[in-house]
Image 1 (cartoon, rainbow, N blue to C red):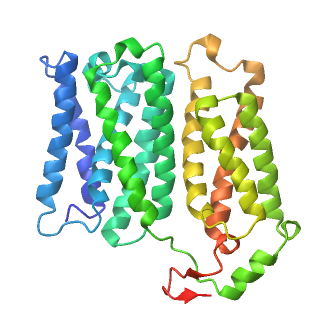
Image 2: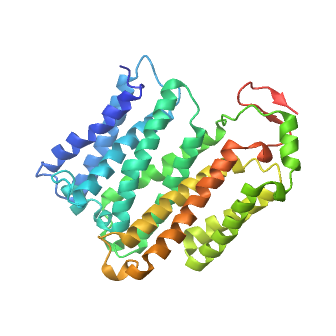
Image 3: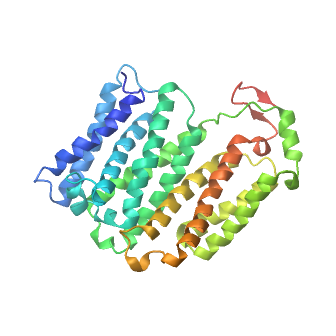
Length: 344
């Protein structure tokens, strides 16, 4: 079995279980600097192991190393959630005490749960695609949006929030989650979508259809208008008002004016970002770790779930529409992903 095969990264990521248990059992690991140092050594050790095992048959995509290491940290995050919710014990106690204590908050634990489940599956899918030589651009863009949204809220919130005075050296272990997605995003954007074979005539016919002839797009525009109002009403200024709201307005424009090819990429990022943000927001509002006074009142529970659920599903339907029926958004001249021929 090669390490590049899908089973290789899976098994490597699962070594997070014995590693965390072993480190937790070392009584010497008790101060913040030692914990941060061990975190760095573990990540560097993983990188060295990956490099050694792929010698002679290196992966075609250097992002293999990024996704393999991030899959390991995803398992660590899942262990943190399981331990803090009382399902297991004896794995990450040392880290939660002197490493990143803010992860014990409801929002921190739900970020760990999302990273340990959704992101973990996405890493394995992208690693499998790299091993088989297939494109993973759609999955990669969804992951990129999800991870960037997570970091945009998580890191500034910890610095300016009540845990701002408890920032430890282990906080800087999050730096790779800021820098590597920038590089990964640039590489993913340069990749090509696997689009169905579409003739120039079909593109032209699709772009001549008015909005009335596209009921699905009309429904999406109605959703986006409602989502804009909901975004303004919630007043999440730093992220939703500055980034999400302008994109929602641009999406309405793109559904009315043909040829906005950027929608094929950015709707996937938008879908991933909203999915992650809403999972953390809704989960934190209902989670038993959240102080009772900050939870959603019982008599408003269904209203909260329905409205926020619709707000979450809309971007997924928008991305699905753009990905499955892209003709309306293609330029007049484009390259078919199947035959690579230029079509006019």
